[in-house]
Image (cartoon, rainbow, N blue to C red):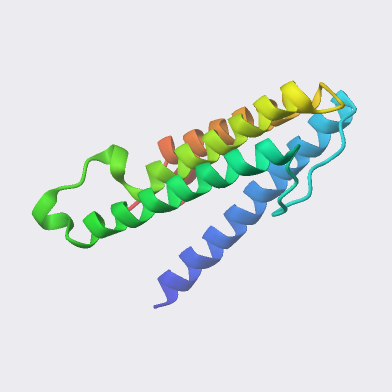
Length: 143
């Protein structure tokens, strides 16, 4: 039981440091480009078209999550492919959502450098996630 508490504490510390690194990168890149920072967990759409497209993407991916979870429940029988697992769908959702935001910022935003900051942040987050997965959380949680 004590080992589980230590691993949970290590995971929480790791996630806080990861959040701090990603936030710091976002702050620095937006300062360098002279772009306003985005609010966390808010629906700040560029225009009405962006709002409709964003909600369409969300509905499609929510549907995929439900379908994926149905197959994950009976995983022994069907053997779900890697590209239909929940983690992969979530990563594709985040990339799709951010690419839609970057396109809308490039096309319609007043400050044309907004899309550069969005793409830079997205690429940094993808790199961090990829690095974290390929290094088994930087060797923190090896079996």
